[in-house]
Length: 325
Ligand code: CNA
Image: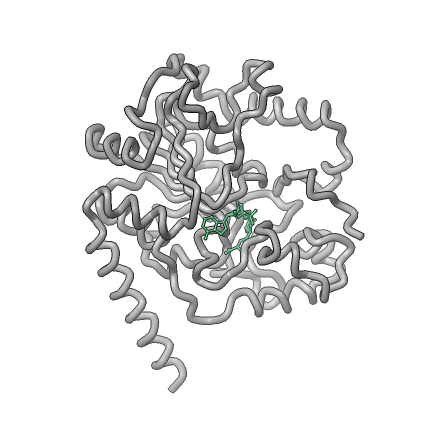
């Protein structure tokens, strides 16, 4: 039996798994402290929420990009942008890693990514890592969409929770990339890769970048994440209240909670077209690659995106065949 329940959704990299023992009230006050220290952007900006998008659809976002000439788009990604490359995410029912770890005989699924467990028993992690990240993975259309935003000078920064290095492989310049949970790209020899386990601090680059980047963002695109891992999940609240937010995901996530609203806190998305509070959040529910393709089509970039992906996949295939000689 798992010691942790699925209801207990919020997870934190920067705190220990003991958080799971906290009561609802304690979690709420912990979150409030986090909000007060990490983000008071909206209060500082003093901006009153208003109708920002003409339509709460992809078309509304596309018009906003075209009319407002966005130059500071931030993208935030999770495991969902890499599933079509063959890497499972954590939490998707049946295909997610957390549902397929029986053979490792763990006390609970998350243990495999917890630093304390790793220190006592690293083997399950290394076996899994080998299975998860075969050599010569190819980035997905979603990765190339992000690369295209960068090529067009529209991307301020890409924040990823992924550790699979697919953003680097797609050619996204390192200065555009914040790998919030570390990366398999570098490591300390065979001892431990530079990924952030639950219970470890996030890289300094993450904390340095967020305070500069998020107040500048003129569009936030979130793709393929359940937005349950903190502090990454709360970044969506760090943009100005006038910054449109587009979620491209298989399910609606981080929808504003009534309790938070009651306390006057604006945490999470408001996907309510009738809401007078904030007409800027758009949910496009479906596959990340399909959503990115649709965006590219509406923006007139589809051919360019397909060419970018085809050319780069050919390069990866050529490198693979060279390496196997
Ligand atoms: P998660 O909690 O597993 O959530 C994934 C989300 O993406 C869910 O909401 C899914 O419904 C959605 N999703 C899955 N596939 C698609 C798709 N094709 N199109 C659209 N939506 C999709 O994963 P998160 O990234 O939110 O959680 C953060 C963890 C996961 C980080 O610590 C990562 O290091 C970790 N992780 C990374 C990888 C990777 O590097 N590729 C793989 C597995 C887990």
